[in-house]
Length: 525
Image 1 (cartoon, rainbow, N blue to C red):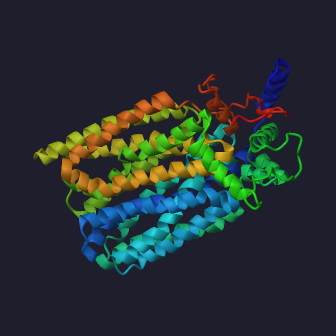
Image 2: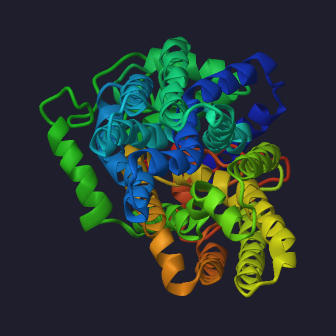
Image 3: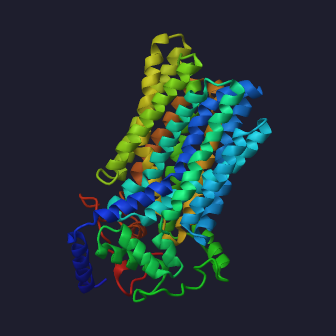
């Protein structure tokens, strides 16, 4: 970019920042993010409710610990079908209707689980619900990131994790509420009422606009412009965002009306399948250094989020509390409610820090806190195993500290990073890969936890998770840059440069400074 172009671009940036923001637009963007993120309640409720329902399912159906492990963890493997299909579906029918599809799958799955007459029937319900979970996990953060303005994208993109925690808390409350019913009825009510959020979600999503980036890829520039005007802080920011999206999609900067997209961009055209194949080749077979780095970051953070043992704590919390010395079912389920409340409280705190403190400080601080909490939990459980009853308090305090540290950083930042750092043309497919890694890792952790603690003791299993958290901290420190305040297209340019040349602004709002806003710009590939 020439000095003259740089000066003109900086002048536009200054004007965009100086213009007063529109509170109504921010409220509209928040409403869109809330509706999209409600899909995450689906996963959260399932995690929370299965932790307690498993106690009664095992008693009612007379199944083994191995079958319980498979029952709890298999949903994550089943969700691979949904996360893989979501990449294609969201590019084909749009982000909004993909959310409706996710709600439909989980509605059917929840009903099947609620009316299950045996273990096999229950597994069929888990399969259908798992597809919906896979769809939901991929589409919610992608849609939110594409709608949100840069100034509040971290806040809004953390909503999926907020709703996962709300879902977990609701699942724990459901366990406690229905635990007083007869065993054969109680667990079916616990699972069946999970269909209720899907009804509200499918209804509310019709009020949402489509993603502006998806509209641009369809050549529907006028609709995209209207959505950006409704969700951007200022009119100038809406215009600059549209110019960047057009450049990234290969649409001429001077084109302001609806137009025909380049061949192969639209899945409804003959070249759609060719483009799909080209996207996967660029991601997996011939990635550029920038794409390789973005995919490594997305996959790495999703892997470590689960490999550090969060689902072992949340899904098996009644069993962990029992090992710590709490015996009665009512007390076990009541303690899990406290755990769910702690997770939800700290994730709400995190949403207000992401765009003020930044992603990187929260992630590093969170991972460090998780490491020491896991070491404390491992020590406490080891002491209990050796007859030290006084260590019960250390175990409970360590569990609550662990979920608090997870919720304030690792939990929400994973979904924010995963939706921010992937280039527009690869975002849906790249996000589906990252979510697939997330779910496979979670499935492996949950389907091996009981066998693991029987082999190396329950205290040893949490020492192992602590070692993973230590490796995660090193990975985050060396590989993940700060993305606070940058536009999605600016992040793509940042990764292409290979290093963070500019710090994010103190106010958390940074407009693009790359050549993507120039009329003759060529986006970084």
